[in-house]
Length: 117
Image (cartoon, rainbow, N blue to C red; front, side):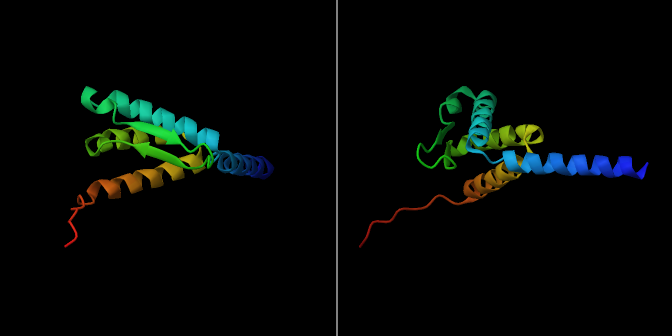
């Protein structure tokens, strides 16, 4: 009986390691960014849909630019939250950090440009 339990634990550990290894590949991140952008656009009102986009750097494949208007941020965050349970472990951690960064940016006061004297 204990051999069976140990085998299950080792299988779960191997699955977790595989999940971690594959979760941060550029093509996986790209597909999740696209899912999030599409879902956020579906959630957002018509006037905000065009403000949501994602662009992958053609040279640095791990670099992404997620653009949205400040008013569209709640829809992007909601899209991330709804997609998290379906993501591989490492991808989920990555997008939780993206969500945290977006939240911090959203709460920053708008910078006031001043003319040099």
